[in-house]
Length: 327
Image (cartoon, rainbow, N blue to C red):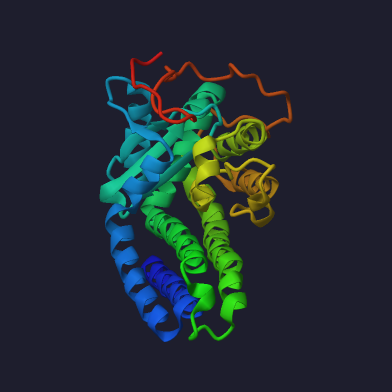
């Protein structure tokens, strides 16, 4: 009930922002056109935005026969989470990262990068997958996916108005200044909405994901490694579509972009500390593998994966790429 209310309020806020942009571009008529555009975006976002996100992030679907270990892991964790097993996608980038998308648990997908499989061990990969399954179970994926679609559409609408007559529209109360402001303020406002949604949901997904995997310290260790390596490796697909950065477990944008001034993720150190407190409060299953001690700031080795068969081809960080066999 709460998630449905949250999504409704979010969509209402983004629709209102759409209408404000339309008003400054074309006055009353522009506002009505923007409202109609927002309704279409809502419908498109609900039914198709997950496919759009996967495509824009160069995520490639994989068959169980090619990555049986990963599929088995997703199966087991999905049963623990009480949701259907989502589709599995792989992003061919050396930056370790992951995200989930889908309008509901019955139509969901989890995407992990080849860098994640290469640099993290089995427990850490499981913890990351459990975090993404927590997003799916709480239907955060619908909220985050539609937010990403709206943010991109708002930016496009603002720029369209500037270059195609918004500055000269007589109904615009601020004239060219108003149109120019919309180009900068509308995307910023959409980004602020993303921040408000993403920050709180990441803490919740960390907690719920740690409970699904039963290993909070593995997630803490994974976040530590991903945060370090994400700053060293450029995720080209994410850089081209920064409005979707909030969907990843760690902000995929490099520190060279101004987007990082408005991070969509909580501070990684705070997330790790929260997971350590959770681990201390959780009962220990002595029959299972105990979590590791707190993650250390040791040098990250490039070959630190947990024996995964990592894909070496597919849609790459570049402009396409060929599909082929797994490495």
